[in-house]
Amino acid sequence: MSMPTAIHWLTRDFRLGDNPALAAAARGPMRSVFFIDAQLLAQGAASRWRLERALRGFDAALRQRGDAGVTILRGEPHELLPRLVTALGAAEVHQSDWPCPAMRASQQRVDQALRAQGAQLVLHPGHLLIHPRLLRTKGGGAYRVFTPFARALRGIGADRPGAGAPPRIPTASGAGWPQSVALDGLDLAPDLHGGRAVLDAHALPAGEAAALARLDDFLDRASEYEARRDRPDIEATSGLSEALALGEISPRSVWAIAEAR
Image 1: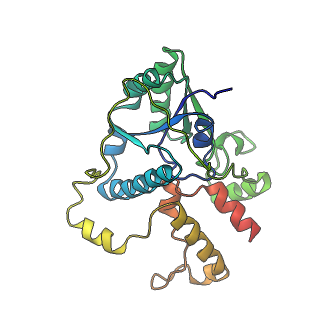
Image 2: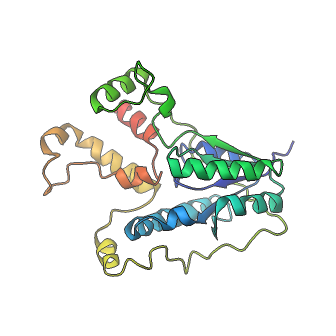
């Protein structure tokens, strides 16, 4: 029995492991799609520069598993995804849930547009340790102080990581599928100017493998963290914040790996 065609809407999940949205889409022929939209362009130049590096790494990882790579399009997801669904004959668009107000608004627009065509947006966990609705105060509100928040989280426990990287990712094709913006000529931060040379020289390595290696290195020296974390002249912290923000590694994986160590 053949599996249905699907679309993976790539936002902040530039990894193959513990990526439920990608795993769900890859059950059958699929395409990963990334949008250069208003939400992306509103970010600072350095942030866009770093995101481009994550995008390039993820595209290469897909191609190593037989996929055609990421389709990069300029425009708004709610306007373009319905056309892509029609081109592939897909019934589902899978996305890693990213519950911030701007993304929630975008998801609602996309969901409404897809339902008009008989398709649906399917949201998957993985960008957070657990969903915010599961971590509430006794009064039902959100925590505003870190210590009780952390205590409650430890009591509940983080979600367990999902499946590892799919060994092979089948590519979907269809009539009317648009031409992707070429990665070769892509520059998401043309306004970076003089900062580009600094980032080129000093930025940490990008990508899922680099994030996992950095976590492993940090755990080797984590016992010194409390005493050394305020020393800017030494490498005492994990340096994983940008990898976590872009989903090159999931917080659930960090928690599980650290717990195992």
